[in-house]
Image (cartoon, rainbow, N blue to C red; front, side, top):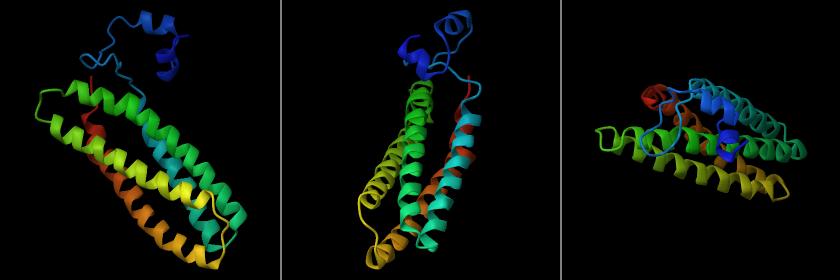
Length: 166
């Protein structure tokens, strides 16, 4: 199985059998009928994992909090990679030289900024030993990250995902 086939979840034979696979112009990224539902499922899982962080923070269970941070970070990184490679690359090429191109490029840049901010936050608190002082700072930053994350998910699901089409 080739690398791209693994990324897109299909064997080489499945890819070859698809005679009418729509490629996003020159990107070589095929349209995936299930991609949006998978990304929305990821969002649901991300929200659940984030709620675990909030809960363990409220309970001051720092050992579980660190574990929840690590789990969320891994889930978030996998989702981001999938979205970047399968979704944004497809859209950028599909809408190349069209009115939507600027909007999509801005959204992709914004997604990368959100990703970097959240990863920075997670790495920071993944590596410290929590105490009351760090915990107060963590709670403030956690609230800000929660707002950014929820806002980003809402925008993607209500506006951006509508642009994904054959």
